[in-house]
Amino acid sequence: MWKFAHLVINDSAVILRLCQIICIRIENGAVSIPKVGKVNIIQHRQLVSEIKTVTVQLSHGKWNVSFTQEVECKTAKRVLSLIVGYDINSQHTVVGSNGWYVKNPKVFKRSSTKLKQIQVQLSRRKKGSSRWHKTKSRLNTLHGKISRQRLAFAHEVSCSIAKISDIIVFEDLNVKGMQQFNGHMVNDNVMGMITSLTKYKVELNGGIYHEIGRFVKSSGICYQCKHTQKFGLSVREFACESCGLVQCRDLAAAKSIENTGENDLMAAGIVARVTPKFQKKTSIKTKVFELSKFGVGTEKKEAA
Image (cartoon, rainbow, N blue to C red):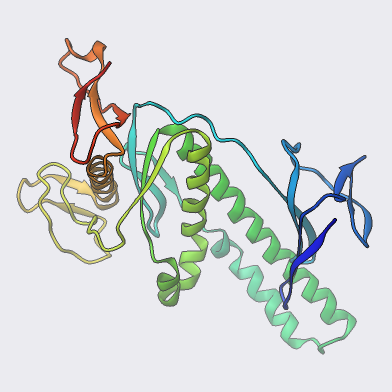
């Protein structure tokens, strides 16, 4: 019992999605597909539940098979011990409010010279000839390598973010709009990929993922006195006009995102600030939250 959901064919990929999969199975290192037969595969991980959908995709000259399964998320954490805001920019891929920096590897930029050489060679070949097909294959292989490196980097960063904190706050970025001005920079920074991967990984771990509004100002706000100043994109460090504190632009933006996300979650009644028993007699207080059972506006209550 199977049927085709849809079939997409274009110059870069052939995608075939099969739904209501009952006869598709994996056995002896091969996947059995209706009307195709058994195809040998390299399985990256073991299946954890029954197969819901299968996507067969030809991308960059290689066939990939993706299986969709249902996975149970961990129980939502009652006590949330750490909240971190993250700023995404061009120089550093991610900057956390806890001082965590991730440098942008710029995969496309590193491969741009070789990519241009192959493209020039392809333009000089006669279209349809054997040498043209060989050069085209080399170009597809290089594009596939760049794509896999971006995906691996996005998975690595999103896993680290999901493990570091219980409450994660990002900006709601207009990635498509940013691509119109500088598409190579945005694609090389995998902005949208990191946020989408982080979201489902945080939910699997029982944490909270939150995005602040797209038009909420986060850059140029002093994290000590909350004074707002204006400057250009070329300024990476600034001195606050009010208190004189010299601070990194990206770190200040991440701290501002964290404060905005914390206020949004408490105003919506999702979490509430609590004081653990072991901190009642100490002078050092850390932020600890708990899933709120009360109405909107509850900010503080004593921990049980």
